[in-house]
Each structure stands twice: as C-alpha cells, then as structure tokens.
Image 1: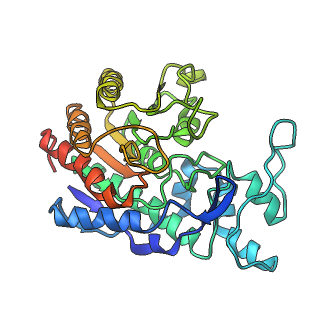
Image 2: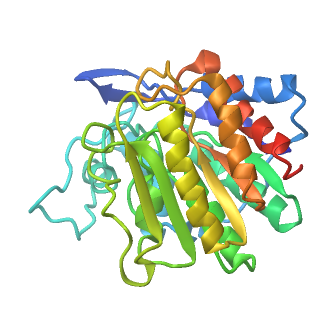
Image 3: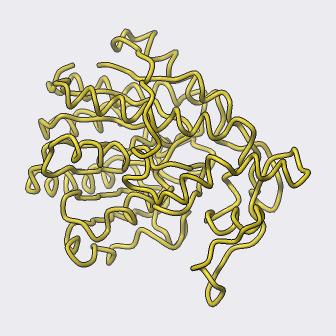
Length: 346
C-alpha cells in the first residue's frame, strides 16, 4: 500500500486549553513520526511525498474566506504585537452575531473556531496545507488506478467544517479528498469515520448532499467531545436526507459492540454502492488512549481493516486521531495490514 507523508507536519505544534489549564497540545509531531516508523518497519509499501496543490482545491469544501483566514492568521496575529501561540478568546454563541466577519484577528480567531484546541503558530499554515496535499495526493493515486492508499495526514482534519476549525483540525483532509474524487469523475463516495470523536466537520460539509454518504462511529456526544454533534437523529437534510448516519456508542465500548455498529455501517455503504471509500482513520478508540473512552485492543484494529476490505472498494485511509503515541503506530498500521490481508490488494 502506498503511503503519502510530508515532514512539514513538524512545523506545527501548539498549545491547547484543556481541563482549565494551558498545556502543550496532545496532537503532537511524535504521532506521525511513530506511524511512519511502523509503516517502514512492517514493509507496508512505498512512502511518497505529496504534490503541491492550489488552495482553490481546499475551497471546494471550505469557504474561500476561511482558507484566506488560515493563510493570513499568523501574520495578522504577530502584526498586533504578539509572538506566542494564537488562540481564540470569544465565540459568537447563541444570540451573538455570527454573520459578520470581524476585521481584527482576535475576533477572527473566535469567528472561525469551535474550541481552544486549535492554536495557530508560525508554521501552522504550511503544515496544514501539506496535510491537505497529502490527502489529495492519496486520492490522485486512487484515481490513477491504485486500489488503496494511506494519507498519513497531520494535523488531522475531521473536526474542521466549511468555516471553522476545532479539535486540532484546520482543513478537512478527508472531505477535501472525497470532493476531489467526485471532481475526478466519481458519481458517489462514502466517507466512513472511525475516530473516537464524532466527525462533525465531514457531517456538516456533506449534510445536505446525496453524492457523499457520511457515517461515523464515535463516543456518545452526551458524554464525549464534540458534545453538540453526532446524535442518531442527525440523518441529513434536503437532498442529503437519509445519507448521514451516526453510531454513538457508550463509554467502555469494546470490540463486540463496536463491530456490530461497524457491520451495520458497512451494510449501508454496500447498499449505497459508492465508487470509492474514504476512511477517516482515528485509532483513539484504543483502550489506553488518554483522551478517549473505548476499549479496543491492538488486535481489534486488524479486524477493523479486514471488515472494511470486505466492501471491495477503492479506499483511501486518511489519518485522524490517536493520542497514545507509544501504540499509535501499531494500531494504525494494523488497520492497514488487516485491510490488505482482507484481499483488496495494494
């Protein structure tokens, strides 16, 4: 299996406000480094650098003004006299105006953010752009005839929506790749999110569309981040009604209950008969993950990959979460080797 990877991810590592404390972000460079080392150690396949794409490709799922904000945010922040990480301090909640973009950077940060886990640093835009390019390059490989590829993206993307960042995510790599697949001639794409946290960004982007079926298995939002998205009754709207499927699961979920939900989701994908599958691959469902509450074992990720392989679809895996750095390489690559052992091929 081809892996796409960029060293540019090292340019981004900021702080986050968690548990009332400002601390180094859980989403750190060692995550991707550990996965890459495991890819190479297992001989998964070749590793390639991404191509470079025009930012208009990102604007196929994000608004142009949001992409422009990400590109300019650090310069605007430092122009105001500050050199530490940029974090939002106010959000347009409830009855505050959310339709007018502020002109000052402090207002813009809150306008385009859902939480305080998306610091912007001097290298953030270059890292974020490279991450999206990794996903686009992986999709180009599928469009060129590869049956599977692994986009080793960092920062992750599945919490980013058309006009907001959050949950360590800035550009929605998986959604950008899915749209690129459609732009490349596909009629329908399925986007399966197996990260512990609901993929609110992918849901939001495709919620009113029927050319991308979105499915997410995740911790119940009554108790788990992002709290305000991912309930079962969120099934799409307009043309997208019936093409959005959520599987919220309780704390402590292990493989038996998880696999039941996965089988149901895969059944829906098979019935939808897409031309390709994009998988938002989070392995924070692991039993020892420090910020998640499922109980999957490392061997379960082999089973996860094998079940996805049974769909027989051209498949792009896009890396998302997973914060037990010591085990993230084993768990992520187990999904990929399980998939290949399932018979779809390289």
